[in-house]
Length: 93
Image (cartoon, rainbow, N blue to C red; front, side):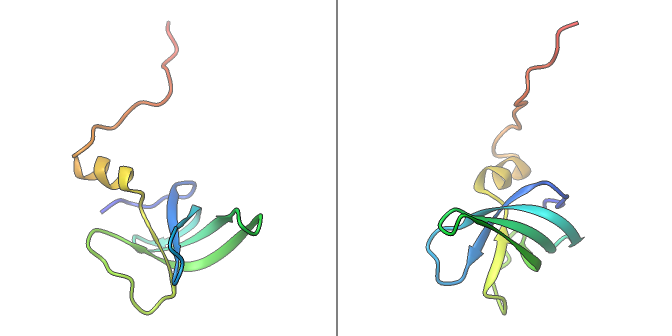
């Protein structure tokens, strides 16, 4: 289980679409329900979606036509399969 927080990036899946869209978490309701700002490059728009399911672990999409998931890299780091990487270079003293 990955704890969601505002500003994290997730994948947004729209039922019937092959590829997901990137989305930013804008509000956390609980560990499995979030609001997101979805970046839709095809329509050059940002869409705000409220109360979307955030699938965790082995959850399967049900009842909602749209849902969010963590990216494969995030899942891999959370499970310990991939070591976390420091992306910024620390300032030297």
